[in-house]
Amino acid sequence: MAAKWTILGILVYAAPFAAARELPREKPNIVWILSEDNSKHYLKLYDEGGIATPAIEALATHGLVFDRAFSCSPVCSVARTTLMTSCYAPRIGTQFHRKLEVVPLPAGVRMFPAILREAGYYTSNRHKTDYNADPGETVWDESSKRAGWRNRPTPETPFFHMQSFGDSHEGSLHVSQKKLAEETPATPLDEIHLAEYHPDTEVFRATHARYLDRMTRIDGRVAQLVAELKEDDLLEDTFIFYFGDHGGVLPRSKGYLYESGLHVPLVVRVPDNWKHLVDGELGTRPSGFVSFVDFGPTVLHLAGVDVPDAIDGHPFLGPGPFPIAPRLWGETLGYADRFDEKYDLVRSLRRGRYKYIRNFEAHYPDGLQNNYRYRMPAYTQWRDMYRAGELNPAQALFFEPKAPEALYDLRADPYEVHNLALEAVHSHRLEQMRSAMAIYQKQMPDLSLFPESELIEKAFENPVAFGQENQPRIAKLIDTANLCLMPFALAKNALPLALKDEDPWQRYWAITACIQFGQEAASLAPLLEAALKDTNPLVRMRAAEYFCLTSDFDPAPLFKQLLSDSISHVETLILLNSVVFLRDGGPDISFEMTRDEVHAQSSEVKRRLDYLGW
Image 1 (cartoon, rainbow, N blue to C red):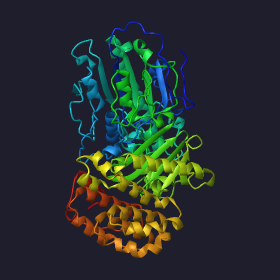
Image 2: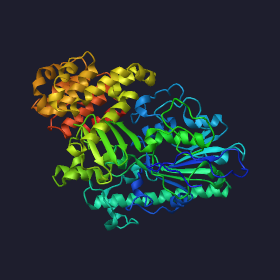
Image 3: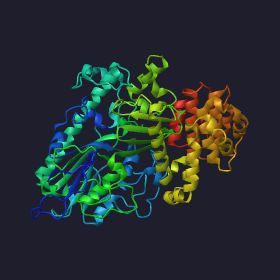
Image 4: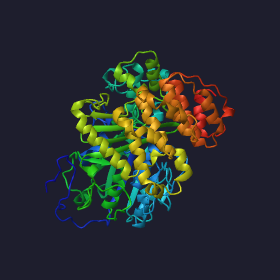
């Protein structure tokens, strides 16, 4: 039967293939193969500049290559928790990497392998977990370096096996420039395809080439795992999903909501004995959108298990009919919050060829210091070149304040360096996507409108209940934060009300909007000056940022007092994020404190103190 496709190319419901023969097993087996930290851009299967991956390509000839598969988050703990829960992280409180507190699963939600276990599957994981939520009941029959389907109780027991390969992890690029120069990668440096935003240096070319070699290793791992299935006579009874656990890993990918951080490879090999579950010709490339919230429901559906109502995802393979979410027709949501010690609240929405990014703290540059990031020679060289004035405008964007919102045409601008948000011809599309983003956040609701310190104190015993109770409040915070997206003449009447609001987070987001308006907000100076003495420490911090960026204000005494008074290591971490920004990326302000004067410390806080030299 010919496949039926929507305009955007996603499989939709059709009657199954002709009646299947009598099957040797009651349920299909399913294997997930994850390569860490890689977007689709490093595989020739997807991108001209990628490397050949024969084993992955062999899976593709006997299955489907999804051209539009996305992680919802560009970093592992958040992405993997999204995969396991099938829920948007900012709705359930799992959006911060790495977790400072483990949150409970929402009512009605279980990590999907636990549901498979209940349905009779043997579940195994080798061996990375990295969850931001308490898994609750046992998710895996075995999760270890030795876990695998061969440990199941009987040969007839169906299994779900998840295996992660770290050869492609970001840490593989934490080598010295000397070592990079001494290596001879398989791809000659003059054949490397550099991103438009990267400087053309030997370090960047060698880093890229080294990573392509790592993907060759991944392909070998895939070949070995497939060979084991074949050896056990299980290949034609097993769906194999190969995908990246999020994007990465050259600078401006992992940790960022650009396509290089979110757009992952996804290849699904369809076994002969279960191809009746997939309507469509093998070897084809569906172009509809699928994202990580959908992967778990798809596995459940293929296994013939009911998909819970309390999750956000929907199946994209299996017998129909089943619900199709709007994103499956060409839409995907992305979120980024804290990465280790670095805070920067960002949300993204892609619809078809267009991408909308909302930078809620746009004064923080993408290149804000993150200690782990800058272990990579390419990162440090890039920043050194920026400070030396050696970059062109596209390359320099990473280290400069961002626009509060951006719109990209990915067909014309795949590297996302040409912001269309200020172009009149795109004003209608911009307004549509801005509105859609606000609706997503309000309906979720998006907990990140409260700082992480507030959530840990008041929300994380039951994040979903907290979100529902505070949904109108969160909607109001979003509206206040979005005042910076309109001309000041239209925002100036609402801003004073928000600056005087009883809710401290209204005041916080009103000041954040004023930072975007800069000197235009000078008429509100009395209210902003009052905020320097606010009862809330983070409101005072944000007011200090405003005056540092618009005047010769010296914030050192204020921050010294805030850091000394803070008894929350999470609040302290947020304060230090601002200190690093103001010292490195703002008006070059001098801060002098000793480590002992910072009372609330943690491993993340110590990373900031190490960098600051305190």
